[in-house]
Length: 408
Image (cartoon, rainbow, N blue to C red; front, side):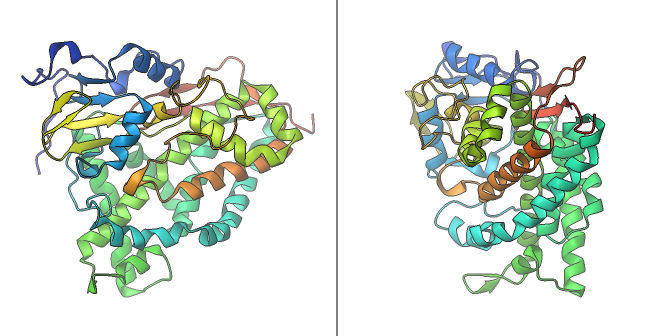
C-alpha cells in the first residue's frame, strides 16, 4: 500500500462556497500552546457553524454542540471508517468501527463485557495498586514530570493487564500510539498502525499455541452469526482496542492535573468533601475534552444548508460540545457544584460511543482519591511551562508539578 504525503493546502472543491473556507490546522492550532480548549473555543466563536478547511487534505468541520451530537448519532450519513485527520485508510479491518448498525451491534457485543461495571469493579484494584505505587514512588521528591511518571504509565499498565500482555511492552507501544493520535503525516500514521498490528498478531499467534482467559482469547473464540471470526478481524479488532486504550485517558489525566495545579480552591473542595469527586470528574471531563474524531460522508447529503459530497470527511470537535454556550452556562468555568446531568460528548454518542468510558472515569476517580491524601497541595513547578497541543487528540506532552513533601 502506497501512502502519499498531504500538500500543505488543498484546492477548494467547486461545490464549496468561498465564504465557507476557513483556515484551521488542527496540528498547529493558534493559541493551543497556551490553552488548547480556549483555542478551540475561539474557533467556535469566530468560524461559521460549518466550514471547509484546506489543511490536511481538505475537509469539513463543525463546532456547535448540537450539530456535533447529531453527526455522532447519524450513522446513515456519517461513518467512522475515516475517523483520522488526515484521512489515511486503515491497512486492516477493525470492527466494530468498520461497521454501522445493524452489523455494528454483534461486534460491539464482543467488547462490551470487558468494560461492564462488574469487570471494571474487578479492574479497580489494579488501578488502585498501580496509582498508589506510582504516587509513592515520587511523593517524597517534591516534584514529578506528571506525563512521563504517571499518565504514560497508569492507563497502559491497566489496559495491558486487562489484555494479559507483558507490562514491559508499554515502552514499545507508546510511540506508535502517539503517532496515530498526533501525527499529521500519513506515512507515520500508516507505519504506526502496522507496528501495533504486528504486536497484536504476535499475541494472537501465542494464544493459538497456549490459550488464555483474557480479552484477546475471548475474541478469538467468539462467533458472529454462528460463524467463527476470521483472524484478520480478530487482529484488527484487538489492535483498535489497544490503540484506543493508550492515549485518551493519558491526556485527560494531564489536563485535569494541570487545572487542579492552578486552582487550589477546587483542590480544597475535593479534599474537604471527597464524596464530590465523581461529580467533579464529570465537570473536569466536560471542560477538558480530548477526542476530535472525524466521519466519512457516506452519500451526497445536505447538512446545515451545505451540500456535502460522498467520500469527503467531516470533523466535529467533540470537546466543544461541553464548551458550547447554548448547552452549558458559563462553559469555560469549572464549577464542581454545576447541576447534574453535566452535558458533554467526551466519549461520543450514538452507536460508536466509547465502551471504555466507565474505565476512564474509574481511573480518574482512583487517581484523585489516592493523590489528594498524599499530595494535598501542588502547583506547576516554578520555572516550567506545561506543553500541550491540539490534533486528533488534545494532548499534554509535558507537565511538571511540585509540592512540599510531607517529611519536609
